[in-house]
Length: 283
Image (tube, rainbow, N blue to C red; front, side):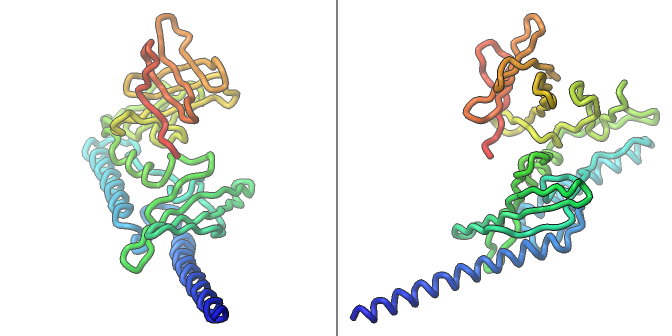
């Protein structure tokens, strides 16, 4: 009797691990195929390996780029149209030259594959991102890439696409340009950063906060020496000075703007009561 029970248990365990390996192999196959053939430009992504929602966001972003290019042409402007530049399927905008698939976690119809990337052209930098897949029928599809590297332009691929597509259309300048005093072109979504001493695009910043409805964003730049922070929001641009490791505040008389890290998340506000207007999303 004991032998039969042990034999049944052994068969059950064998079947279980056999099914798990099969699922892991299927997920690995999709991720491997995508990154082997992906050129680094999101327009070239194989939609046959992507979820419907991710494919829809790509189409929306491409439509936004086409609309911006059309406005530039119609205005006879020589400015650059709004585009998503760089790789958005990894957290390094310069992309990767190699990759290795690591641990895979599967829960029902959702899988997360940890992928280690390498770019030999960027001082052999290595980093890891999480590729999220959803099961559509019998096939696994890539639904998102959660950025783990510190160089990410957003928190994930869908975030970058959504922010780009939903951002207010930049005004298109006539011939003569819309560049400001620093040479930043608003028609391409650029604005000047006092801290970085360069033109930046808010939706590409690694640290972004959102309002309670998720309809507006505020971008944050923190100086390399951590002494100052710069916030770009609908309410304006703010330069804040460090008070502590997790707190920045304005030194301008009468200003109550602040940037604070609470419970591991950054918050920005401008009122005396300390109420946050924008909060960092949980990762």
